Image 1 (tube, rainbow, N blue to C red):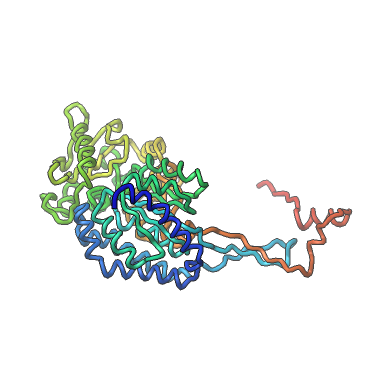
Image 2 (cartoon, rainbow, N blue to C red):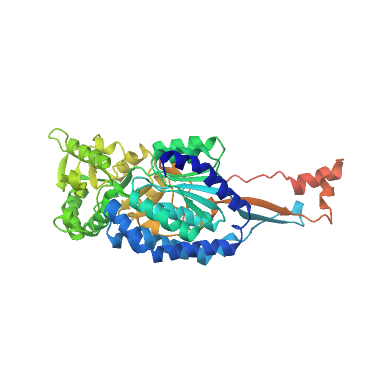
Length: 477
């Protein structure tokens, strides 16, 4: 199909998704559970196809593909199937005495047609995870995978219609297709990517007053001090950073610590990298590759610039690159806070170490910048932990481990400020993709509202002031 034909067919695709929703077939609990189970079966039947696609696009090892994509999704589906009926039950609200007798509830109803636009770094997971919530909430979905991971996009386009026909439609293509999709009217748009495109998505959504969820990433900092087991801390930081060759929205972006703490960490990080990927990560099947030539050139250029003689940076580990294979070695370096690597999210296997004088200085450093998607603190000092909890703002705050919060379906995943808006996973997905409708049922008899109908005499006035809209005084403590 040509690009022109693809764009022209998008309007019809959206109309078909809306017709399917308007038919009412998506509302019953049984339909929703059937779609989730069908997606689960797709992942089990064609897990090898998806892992092969991930290897072709990103060099992902099958075990990592299962951990971070396929198995991640089957776990999310299992959690949702187990709890969905309970999540969908009407939620009771208390009724003031003045309105009794009456029953008040919040009812969750599907929004309609949802657009999910996925990025390239976890192309299977980050398309299907939001779709799990959208289907569980009773919507139809149009999914737009990234054109930057063509093998994964093709696998999704092949298998999703075979298992989720009438529920989910996959639209392949690039910027023209995405632009045309954003011209259509949806009932919710879910976008994962960067802030620049997030602003485009939000501006397009505003034309139809469409609500949006934006998962945008950013620079996720780490703070480490001397109270921790530095060997264990180094291993966990290296694992979270170099997974998927650093191309993870919640990967540790840089590490803050005192000179003494960073000196100890710098000693252990090269050993941790060797434990994970061997002495030559280029030969490790567990270590991925940069997604395309443009992303490689950006990373290699940043690395070269910050390693120049006058840049004030010093190499701790790694530093080698190979354009032919889009390989960037797991790299750790001491840098100045003003280095270019600190200007934007690195999104690659380069970990800067930045010296601060104290935990308080680290908190000030973080608060002077955009609110991060995730913040990781390695400290056994309870006072330090409390200070980071109370004095910083981030999408998530983890103590002692990076990245792992994504695997807990009971936790909301989302950003704040520049790192995004809205959240999902588990019940939070149901809330995101549902309208929370207030329902009040008050019998016509007895008509207790007659006590507040006009005309107003002295007795009604006293009743209103005392029971319906009372003025209250609060004691000053």
